[in-house]
Length: 393
Ligand code: LCS
Image 1 (cartoon, rainbow, N blue to C red):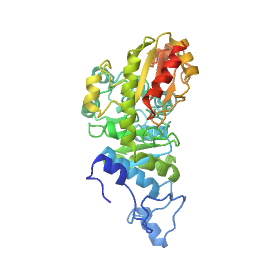
Image 2 (image 1 turned 30 degrees about the vertical axis):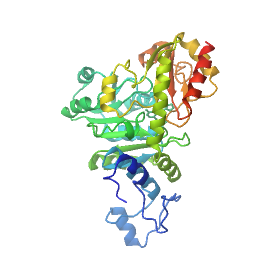
Image 3 (image 1 turned 120 degrees about the vertical axis):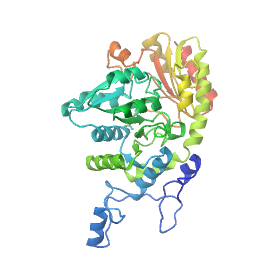
């Protein structure tokens, strides 16, 4: 079925799909590494692209394509490229857009490895970068150089929840011939559609909301135009960053309930954020649905909803954070996000504990910062758990 003219929720259910000869309602898992050709000539035509035909799963597979077509339709782009992880998606973008002598600008508080790999590995290939506050247009303007080729935004950013203005930043970047990529992991296309706001590429860690059940690792890229899609796909295929058919099938299945999951998680998150904002042991709460969020108005403008990620600061810093982590009983003490279960983590004592306090502060991570990925359970249970854990401080 062609679902490209249907509503978002219909696309979640009906986009992609294949004409299965047995009429299966759901695209089967084509768990095969290779495909038979009908003849030598047929094989040749598949390789040149004269005829549509599957060759080898790293280059394409119906189950993976089902997911890719769906993601492209949801993000309103030309084509989707599924990858083995969110980081494979990030690196596909870096390797496609940047060449020796080029420069990129990224937000200072990106998901750690998206910044770390650029700063640690890419200089080996003559690529330079500046990680700045992309919520400020003047800062972006100040850092644009003649060799700047990529503006990389993550909004809301992980874990600082800062919101960058995709429309304004894309306009500025395009005036300088710069490609704009947005990591849309925290929102999913249900809450934010960066290509509609002017970006050229959108990517996701599908490990999170797209799959939504904390049982796979995966990524996806959607390009607005054919030319960029072809370049990205070439890098993905030849770097071997492809997704696996079984993972793709799970992600496509999880994707069907994206909007109902997010609606429910968001409703819970609003209540949890309001509870935290009034808690005497909480110093601050950063949630796009609260008027106190510094970019509340911008969030309302470019997002269809505030989502279900909350960062908050505990009074008493590192010690308080550890006490809460050691006493939660319902929320899972775990990294990752965007699943149906509530997850909690404290970067200063966990993911970022090896960094100095100074380095953490520079990345926007204060000692009391706690990150919550609010799930779809009964909200009273989430709040009761936080209450009893904070009582122990
Ligand atoms: N982009 C964002 C915004 C992310 O949060 C993550 C992972 C990635 C990219 C990378 O995706 P992956 O390769 O893991 O699929 N974020 C994680 C986090 O916050 N905790 O654990 C992983």
